[in-house]
Image (cartoon, rainbow, N blue to C red; front, side, top):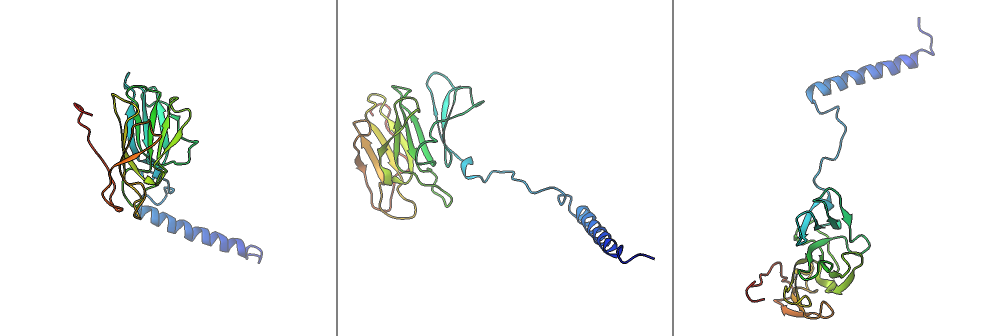
Length: 208
């Protein structure tokens, strides 16, 4: 006969036995039942790439703007990456451009350029004149989402910016903007209305 002190252990053993049988049955019916849950991608917010900007002296060095992850540069074709924008107030990037006349001058338009439900806004246009070591916010803080920047190859002080504006409200800095003094001041080239922004434009290469 079993002592009264052995009964709890028998009960626990019986529970384990029943559980083991149930687990074995589940494994037989579902081969994935024994695999732990794990992230396999690709729904991470920072996983979307908004833009690339290539240096003119080869394809091993280029910059990428991440929709919700900042700006990174590689000089070895993507083997390693250097963060360039971690110290700024916006992590959402829409566009990155390298000045065709000076590769140390970089322009970044913040705010992801894909208008969708899971999208982060930015706080305007940034400029670096030291290769990304430091940045200055050049304005258009209420643009929400910058989708394109064009730098005049004949005059680096002339820059065009396409601003989508806030996605879920009217107003803001939306439309096509131009600076002729390197970003110190901006003028609206094309404003449609308080609900409509600019996503893309084309400049005639024969006549900027």
